[in-house]
Image (cartoon, rainbow, N blue to C red; front, side, top):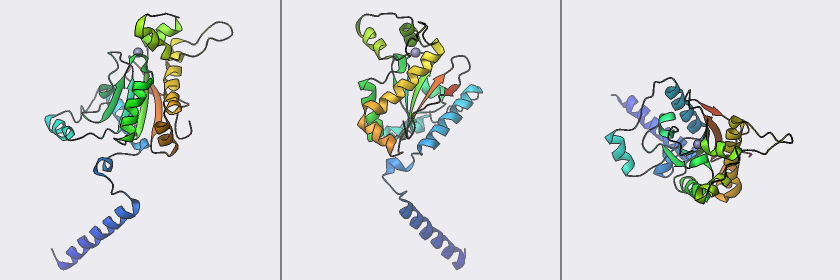
Length: 231
Ligand SMILES: [Zn+2]
């Protein structure tokens, strides 16, 4: 290693530090590794593609990762999914420990407890992406479009599901349409009801998207009309 090489290295170091300072990329440690909303979404799409192809990587599930995340978490995505046993976000997006902040409730409804959990992840953990994930053959949506009435807290929960309105000819949406409508409704509801989520979306720091998971193929179909920067 000659003097010239050393000078080159020092030069690189100075340039890198300057670029980092100017671009503001040196921030609190928990934010350093967090991707943009678009990059976070891309990671989920790639993971789902591996799962659909039956070639999951099963990443970041070993003892070393467990030890790393025991010190703190910085999940890159929040996922609101149904409690249905066949819809498991970490598996279908092929992610590992500490990657996703998952909230699950029947019908993937954005009630106050769910929104409060998301406010924690967005406000404290700086998570950049929120996914509302409906799924095929959702029993909660099916119950609502069939007009079923349930007792107790299940009755309250079903009232949170939004399956679309009955049309003039008294024919409501199909189950598939109702599932998509509910996912989009819940996605919009998050920013409508939470000032923190609304402001985070407005500044572009957070993006909210909705999708429907296929029980048969394992694929997530991303929905049009997703609530992006301008919901
Ligand atoms: Zn369901």
